[in-house]
Every structure is written in C-alpha cells, then in structure tokens.
Image 1 (tube, chains in turn orange, blue):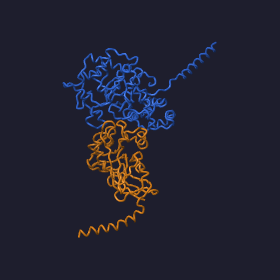
Image 2: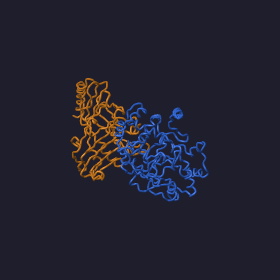
Image 3: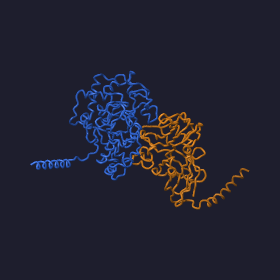
Image 4: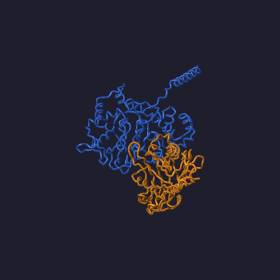
Length: 271
Length: 344
C-alpha cells in the first residue's frame, strides 16, 4: 500500500504544481525595483501598547510604560528562492519612537522585485556606524538631533532600546520620589578595547504569504509586532522590584537577551 | 600748532594701525612636533581654518552651551593651567553641583586615542557632547544647544564664515570645537627643546638625573613624548571603587574596576591637583604616594606597582624624588600656557 502511495503522490504533485504556478505567478521572474514598508506595532502581550495603561509582566508585577524607543538597522531580505538582498547599510538606520507612529512605519526603497519570505535585521546600531565620523551621523543617528535621547555621550554610543515607566512594585527613586523603572540598553562591543556587545540579530519568517515586491505597484506592508513585555522574560524574568534600572552595566546583557525575541511578523499585506 | 600736532598724531596712529594690519600674521594651523608620534585625529577630514578656530574658541568660552547659560567649557578648563581647573580636586558645574573626577587638561588632543578618565569617548569630535549632557556639568540637551545657536544674533554668521553657509548642524558645531582644541598643542617646553636639540634646551645636571630616573621608573606608563601610553591602570590611589568604577563604568567588565586613563605629564607643574579624584595637591605628595607606602592594594592594582619583594609602589630615594621633580618642571610650556590665541 505504501509503495503505491508514493508514486501516486508524486504523480499528483507533478500535475498539480505547474497548474498552481500558472495561476499565481503569471510573471515568474519579476524585474525592476520596488519598496517594502515595515510597520512596527508596539504591543504589550495580546494588545496594542498604550502608554499610561497598566500591564502585568512575567514576574507578576504591574508595569505602566511611558517610553519605548528602539533602533533597527542592517536589513536583509531573503526571497522564496533563497536569494539575499542586503539593503544598503546607510539607507537603513531607523529610530522607532514610541511617541511617534510615523517613525514606526519605515520604507526600504529600491528593492529588487521578488517574493520575500524572510527578513533579518539588527536591534541597535552596528559597531562600524557607532564609531563613524560625526559628519556621517545625520537623520535618525544625529546625536544632537533625532537621537539626542538615544545616545550616551559619556560612553560614546547609541542606546539601542529604551524602556521607561512606573510600577507600584518598583522602589522609590530618591530624586523624583516616583516608583520608576528604566532600562536603557546599548554597548556595541567597544571601539579600542572590548566592552559588552548587546547588538542582536533578528531573523523572522513571513507567517503566511511572502512580501511581493513589484516595479510600479504599491509596496507590500510587513506588519510587525514589537512586544515590550518580552523584554521582561525569556530567558530571564526581570523584576522591576529587584532590578528597576539598567544602563551600561553588566545587567544590560540580561535585558538584551530578553528583548532579542520581542519582534515578530504578524502578517504581510500585499496590494 | 595744536591742530598740526593732533593731525600728525592721528596720522601716525592711522599709519601704525595700517602697518599692523599689513603685518598681521597669516593664520597657522596646528603644528605637529617632530618628537610626537602620528596624530590619532584625522585633520584632513576637518582642516583647521582661521574662522573655524575662532568659532570653536567662541563656543569654548560661551556659557550658552549649558542649560541655564551659566557654565562654559572654559570655567573648568582654564588656559593658564593647561586647561585644567586649578585648586579644584573635582569641579563644580551647573547649580554648583560637584562632579566626581578631576578636570583633565585640554592639550595635545590630536594625539589622544580615547578621552576622559574612563576612555568612554573615541573621537575628539564627540568630546563636547559629554560635558554638555552631564547633569552636574552643563546639563543641556545638545539639540537645544544647536537651537540656541541658530537663534543667536552672531553664530549663524560665524558658521557661514567657517563652513560656507549659516546652517548650524551637529557636525559643524562639533568640528568647530575640534578645530579650537586641535590648536592646543603643547610642545614648546624646555624638555622639548632639549630632545629636539634646539636652542633653549639646556638641562641642568639635576634635571638630567631626573630624566634618567623617569625613564627607568615612570616611562613604562608615561610613555613617549606624549608622556602617556593612553592605557587604563589602577595606580592604587584608592581601594574603594563603589562610587566610581573607572574604566569599568564604560566597559562593564570587573577586571577594569578602578582603572583610569594614564594622564600625560605635560605641564604637570601647572595642573595641580593630581589623580582622577584630585587627591594630591603637590607633585611631592604624588611621589610620596608611589614611594612612601601610599599605594592601596585591590584586585586590579597595576602589576608594575607590585615589587618582587611584595611591597607596593615604586621605590624612590629622597634624592631621586628631588631629581624627578626638577625634571617634571622642565615639561612646563610657558609659551602654551600664555598663548593669547587660546586665552579668553
């Protein structure tokens, strides 16, 4: 019986596949260039993140957010046939600001036409850019402009992910009298002697359909979820009572290891 | 008669001022001394011009860089003290708040491979952002500084002179400050004339003896004619680093706790107090620290301060200390300390 099944299956596939292909891919090798839009939707677990609203972290603490900013960079798109397209580095450093929805809808331009089912990118600003001349730090990377709140001047480098808020479980911060938590994570590995390296690569597959980039047609939208609560768990539960703040210290590794998996693709919308 | 005299005097005045105008020295950029290694800073990416230097100098002396427009760079970096803060172990910044570290000199910045006591900044261009943002120094957001400069009656014009248009942006702002700091080259001490075999380089027997002691016992860290190897070391000034971990504040590694940048010794006689926390007021007390059992032990203490017999520090006789101090005084560069181009 099994012996019979295989040839039958093969026969079915042979006849069915070309038909499928003809239906969905009238143009098997698209040419030209198009754009890809990525929309980052900030989330808190199952819902859209709202600043000033109470959520519960993995440690069971109530957390209320006021800041959620992050740098994403170094985008690479992989098509269904395995071809990689590296988006030119200088075109893709993006600061996604929790207060500014426009900053969270980014466009990768001039992408070769194709069907892209996989994307990888970096959380943070790579070491080469982190030590680049000041004249090359424009736009989202301008330390006295867009990035002024996302740059450590005393430990020269960008803050990759900045999460701030309040929690009744957090200890009282003496200077403000508030119960706050504050996680500013950076460190690219050092410029002349090593430091911690908290740069994280994110690899994501499109869950259903690939992003279809075509010349002269509307750009596909990749709808990404960025779950701030993921920063508090996996592999280590972070407690705002025990560790209410983290900056450029050893604990930042724990924070970065946690947030490495906060991105996911919810869906791709082709037009 | 009086009229003729007056006219004559006026004419003379005019002529002399004309003459002055004609004799005006052409602007000379930073001079690279032959006894220094290659600079770390890429001057070709930011060539120093007269207008750029003048803009950088104005910024260096302008409290507009601080949150409440009260603190200028020059408040803690004073020209006649090689741009340190004399008599201040640590400096007071905005709202009279004290920092935790001794203000470093601003000299020979072109040769530095990293900046500040913990080496947290890699490039001269990025240096000003640190004191501007530090909450106990100038406590200002750099984007606000740029906005203040854009709305200032003079600065946009000065940016045009320096960079060709009135646009005030981050790179121009920082590069102008670098142009001022690039000019602060100190290499005209008696010692420099001695090593370059130039006139005015006579050294006494005592000073030469001090140089020999220095080369034997100090130059491993205070290396080259920059008088620093630019490394980070724990020299045993304190053994409790809970308030300031030094290099570990930026590297996060426990093996860097208590390590601080080896400072240059140029103009050392003019830059008291000494050490990262300004603990010592005199050169004598610094040498007593090393030679007199003052070195405090801790896990990261520099190996060069552990002698084979188990004692800590650097053995120095009374005669050697006197010779060393005589030598260190030859590193004072009066031309630099009194240079009118750099003073307010």
